[in-house]
Structure formats: structure tokens, C-alpha cells
Image (cartoon, rainbow, N blue to C red):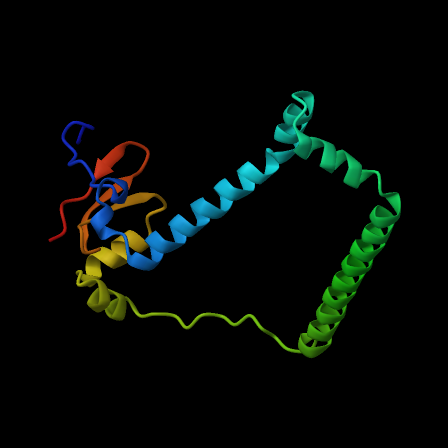
Length: 165
């Protein structure tokens, strides 16, 4: 039985940024910038309150703007109408999709794959696959290219099957 010290350490993608694709890097960077901006935007009321306490003019202009109740009422009415229109359009779209798909079966049973096809695809022995299909719990270890390197079977007591190569 292998111990944790005997197992090879996995190289995590976090430690190897060269393996991350460019679209993934751009998406991650954009996601980070957007949420940092949102985080800073949420601090604006506290910053305004502190500035008002210190007597800075910007805080005074914010308080003066809030006193214009007619503009605030008009703004709230406009926002509520936009929300009602958005909710109504989503409900109409959901109704249209329901009417469109109400009589169709969208879920299909997958086509079964023969053991020999699976063995050819994974480049493994078909006998091993038949044996593994009856096992309830096992752990598969793969190499850097995604090929099966080792299969560990966990039964009542931990047992490991021989290496596959």
C-alpha cells in the first residue's frame, strides 16, 4: 500500500501559469478588475459619510441632491416601470418557450458504448475495463497527457490493482 510520501507530487496549474490558456487569463483578469471596481463602488457611501463628517464639499452636494424628492419620485417610478417591463418580457419569453416545447421530449437515452470501443479509445485492455465496471469505488491516476497511469480500487480494505501501462 502506498503512503502519502511515496506518491508523486502533482504539478498544479496554479504553480505553472504557462499552461493556462490566453482566453482563460484574459477572462480571469477581466473578472478581477470588474469585481474590484464593484467592491470599491460599494465603499462610496462610507467614503461620502466620512467626507461629510470632515466637511468636504462633495458630501454637501450629495445631501442636496437627495433633498430633491420630485426627482427621486420620478426616478423611482421610471425604475419600477423598467423592472415591470423586464419581468413581463421574461414571463412572456418563458410562456413562449413552454408552448414551443410542451409536447416534445428533449431528453434522450445516450447510445451505449461497447467495451471494446471504450478500450480502444482509452488504449487499455478490455478485460480491465470489464473488471472495473463492476467496482463501486476506485481512484484513477492520469499522466500529464490524460492517459490512465494507475487505478486504485477501494473495497472493504484498501487494495490496489497492478499498474496499467
